[in-house]
Structures are given as C-alpha cells and as structure tokens.
Length: 164
Image (tube, rainbow, N blue to C red; front, side, top):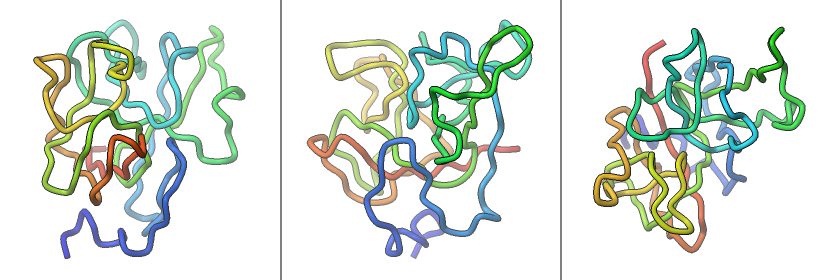
C-alpha cells in the first residue's frame, strides 16, 4: 500500500473542504491572507498571491500552488479570523488529506490538475481534475487522488505533500 493511500481504507466519504484525519502528525497547515476571499470555498485550491506576504487567492492563470482551503469544523468560512486591514486568514492544508471538488472522473493513477482558468459552467478556478483542460489547468506534482471517484459525485479525497 502506498504512503499516499495508507489511511484510505479507514476513511468514509466526507464533505468538500473537510480534512480526512489519519495521523495528525502528518498534517501541515498554514494560514494565509485570502485575497478576494468571498469567492473562496472550502476544498478549493489556492495559489500564492505575489502582491503581499502570506497571501493566497483563487488561481487566475497558472501560479505557485499554496494548498487547499479547508473548514476544520471550528472555524466556518463565514467566520474567518481577520487581519488588521480586514482581510480574512483561512487555514490552508499543505500536507495531508482533504476532500476537494472535481470536474471529471479521477483515480489513484490520474495526474492531479488545479483548474486555473474558467472554461464552462463546472470548470471553475480552484477545482481539481485529471487533465490539463487545453491548458486551463496546471499539473500539481505533490498531489495524488486517494481512490477512484466519479465526476457525478463531485468530490474526491486528495492527498497533498507540499514543503513547509
């Protein structure tokens, strides 16, 4: 069994944006100031925003993957902690497993792409897929889908392993 799927058999289907707890020592979380936070939903991938330190945003073109915004159950996205300037801080998973929205069928062998440019109704920035969508999505080298999921389900368990 691979390191990416070592806890998969213990998991039940979660909600988008929910962490899948295996070994909590394996989790790496960072709080980012979210730019345009009203558009960010739990489970969406965000990229580093180059306009400010510790800032992230929904992708608008390819960028440096920052992680997946999640809802830890104690901090609803509507009740985010705010910086002095009124910008919300949101927990962003950099290492661990989290349920994410998908727009096509995926499995453990599928490459993981982050949609960075809107392309149709369901292909919105921040969602995940298994193909490049004609250049509208970027490949994430440090991510893997945990099992087989259908686009009809709308969600998949994603394992990410970004550096600290």
